[in-house]
Length: 368
Image (spheres, helix red, strand yellow):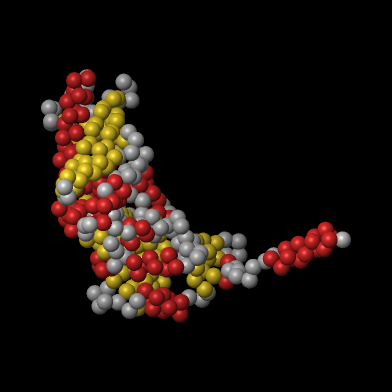
């Protein structure tokens, strides 16, 4: 009899657990696919969202339109409340793919634009972020000719930049620890409109704690990626061959991970960042004779150039007090007693950081 009672109780328990009162039916909500945050000159925040909508043209035909809705407020939450007053249905940001933030707001604080992503349980994970020079709202209204939605175009633009070694990955969750912990800082791609229907990755915004403190141009961003823990599919560079005074193009692959070696000599801390690259010479003028000796000289030239530029990038990072390479984490891990006695914000900008890039060209074109 007891087994039967147990089975009955189990069935009743399962019946009680079926279903969920917390439901959000698709017909009752409007899905946001992108958000833009602008700090205006008057001190207010302009919050703009895009809402993909299927619009019926005829009884059997439809089209996708992507209207944007924006509102101002003294805080982001106040602006969002104003947006809700104009929306015909409840808004849901659980499918958002893109966050755009203008520089004025990023310099003040990045956190208010991201707070809801850390607070809400149904926040999206696969979100990409970008900083915009002037108006993030205007970039969200870009009309990309080859995409139905501008969010799709910008998302793929950023994804391509990550794959090609132009920018690091950036999302609310990837940068959270960088915004809250000492020993590492965030870096976020900068994207700007190029005409009415195109956008371009123009650099990298550097952060210290929650504020934007500097930026790298697009060329310096590639050097940053080469020194960072990011490992894209490949790098592409074009450089001048000194001996021929002509330009050559190379594909570069990093051999393993970059390494950071930290030494502490009586309170004087020093870091060496090592990264080794294997390269394919993929484009070279016909007038250049390519042989082993030429490749050896070119490798040496590139090593010298890359290390000189890497030093300049590191200097810019230190001037912005942006430890986006995570040197502080290495100091904390290997010299913890020393770490506990210092203010990293004061030590990092003044310490010695040396890049050590090595280059080995192993191929000389597709026909070799």
